Every structure is written in C-alpha cells, then in structure tokens.
Length: 85
Image (cartoon, rainbow, N blue to C red; front, side, top):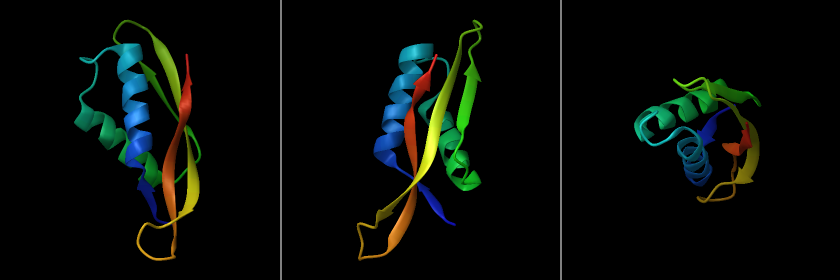
C-alpha cells in the first residue's frame, strides 16, 4: 500500500508540536521527515516525543483512504489525529 503525507494534516501536526515544545525544538524539515517516515511505515500508530526539558507528548496518526485529486483512483493518506499530553 502506498501512503502519502497529507500536507494539511502535517501543518496541524507541526503547529501542535511547536505550540507544545517551542519553535526551536525541531525544524520544520525534521518534522516533515518524521511525518514522511510515518507514511512510509504505513502503520496506524503514534509518534512519541520527549523534549529536552522532559516534557512528553504522543502524536496520533491513522491511514485514510480518499479519492485522488487527479481522476477517480483511491489514494491512502497519512492523517494526523491529534496529540495527547
């Protein structure tokens, strides 16, 4: 199964991450790399992160099937489902 990152969902993930941990904790490029790795792993799971200051959060993801913007094929996207602190 080929899973693609959802850019709008990534934006929500990035905003939540930076609101919790600050803008200096991880770069946007590194956060996108983490998000892309979740898509390649294609698992309905979560990403746990502990900051330098011992703060901890679990970011939840799932795979969603949608119709592609190009034609009528079905495509799987990595969706960000929210954060638990």
